[in-house]
Image (cartoon, rainbow, N blue to C red):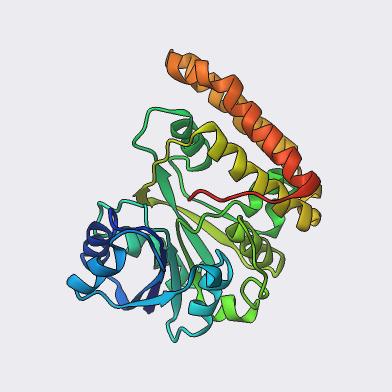
Length: 288
């Protein structure tokens, strides 16, 4: 099946060459197009793309949207499968894309997402462990009573969706979503009666070391998203967040990770306050 890879870029000079090489080395798949969408940047991103003869589309900053930029590229695709990635993932396995898309190709699911591992020994290390376990799984509408909000967990840092289904569901409905566009589409996929598969064998490294202000702003946007899509609250947003917080604390204690334990109270506070403020009055700035 033909696969289009869609990757928004912004100030991506540190990522472009290695990312592009890792995509070109993929085996056992048919890549139809690697579609980079470059938002006008302040670094050398465009020069690097040109020097390496890499095809790209350029847009102005006020044209970018986490949902609409992806949606436009997807709606114009003639591929069988859409693969969404972010610029900051690191792919080391030449079968990453094969593992990500193989069950979509076999019509075993409508969408899939990769396992993400952090290379940092921080709180994110434990959130990745919790959200991306060492076993693949498939979720559908029948799992909502058991999993709640986690039924719709999905990440377009590395994900794939059958093109016909993305178009059938009208993508992101033309909405300019500030964050969580992946959860938005996952909800639509599940509620339409399709299934989503977490592919443990499809691995990417995705690492951040957010400052408290960045974390606060990220959760403020997440709160705004849930305010604007309040139907998701019925699936237990607080319960999902509480379960993750407990897991992080347990694992940090097990590993005697004192750096994480010192950070833990203020980190959790930044998330909680950001979420509450976002639900109250929105606004914020997303950090990828």
